[in-house]
Image (tube, rainbow, N blue to C red):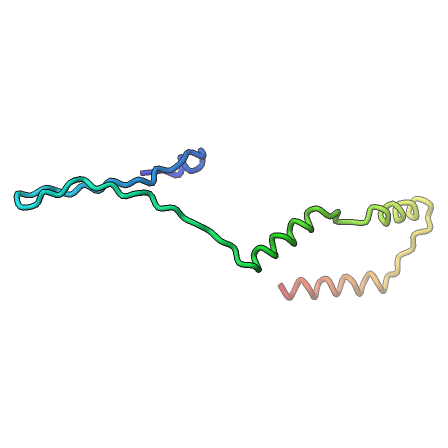
Length: 101
């Protein structure tokens, strides 16, 4: 029997089974070998579309480096201002979205 250690080691599984029948005086049954079964997986069109979207998102950068540089410059020269009301509203909106999960 295959143990979990064989699976972790990346060793292939033996899928050939041998069935031994006991022989009686009236029955002379030979040993039978069962051929391995092959599994197949197919994705729906929706699954394929999700995969394509995932690949596109993985290829894109997750932030605007130009905007980050502008904000860093504004902080450095003291011209960056924070709109407290807008920040508070965005924090509340974010918390409301998290509660929906």
